[in-house]
Amino acid sequence: MTDPATWQQEQISIAYVHAVATQAGATIASWNVDKDGVDATLKRDHRLVELQMKCSFDAHMLADQSSYAFDLDVPTYDKLRGRYRTAAGYLGLVIVPRDVDTWLQYDTASLLIRCAGFYAQIQDLPEAPGNSTRVIHLPTSQRINAAGLDVMFDYAHERLFGSEAPHEEAIA
Image (cartoon, rainbow, N blue to C red; front, side, top):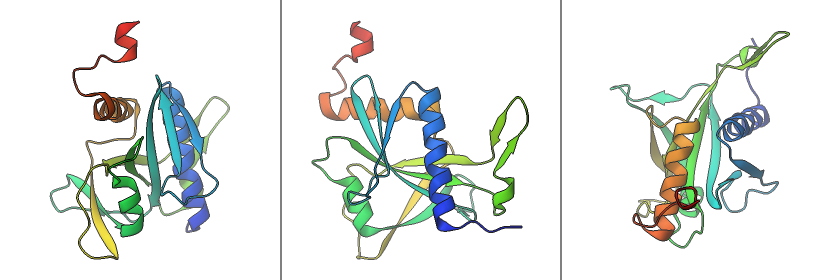
């Protein structure tokens, strides 16, 4: 069994969001410097969402099995929640098996990525108490998948234009 290195966890989390974004009809830009607390910006129908991606092989599930808990550093939390962000900020957590050798299964017809991704909206949350970390709950119902991206993009639209403003695809 090979425990994952930090860089491997970072890479699989980005690969995961790339695969989901592609399937959901969104384009993705990855940043080579993470100074704004953003690993990936997703774009669809002129709407943007930004994700700080994390990866864990020992994520903490709450006792009621409804959410994972993740300790996010306060500086990143503050960057993602910023009131004047033009793109809504989210935390993404990809959960992988401990053994790197089991992350991918492939044969002549397919590639299976053995991990699951969840998100939490950080945009517009209140200031964090303290200055070290903030526990973020990522509900198991908030999957990083096509339906989850729909929710993120809808929120991004409503945040900028209000809930009554029609989406571009509805006008066309």
